[in-house]
Length: 97
Image 1 (tube, rainbow, N blue to C red):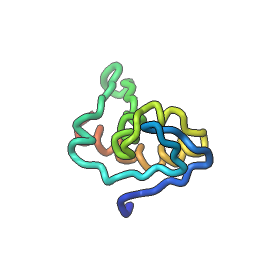
Image 2 (image 1 turned 180 degrees about the horizontal axis):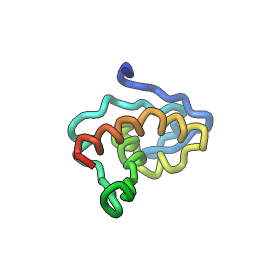
Image 3 (image 1 turned 90 degrees about the vertical axis):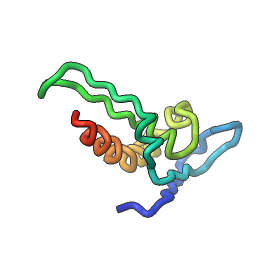
C-alpha cells in the first residue's frame, strides 16, 4: 500500500500552471477523482476493449492539467503509469466492467 502523498522525481522538468516542475506530487485518490473519470468501453463481453483513464486520473491526483501528463518523458510516464494504472483498474472493476 502506498503512503500518500507520493512524489515522483522527474527526469525532465514539465510545465503546469505557468510553473516549471521537477517532481509531481500525487494525492491519495478520493471519490471526486474516481467519479470524474471517463470510462471507455468498446464492444462487449470478453472481446471488449477498456481504455484506462490514466491521463485523467494522474492529472486529478497531481493537480496538473492533462497536457502536463502528456508531456512527460517516457521514463517519467512509465513511473506515473505504475502508480496510477492499478488504481484505474480497481475503479473499472468496481463499476463491473
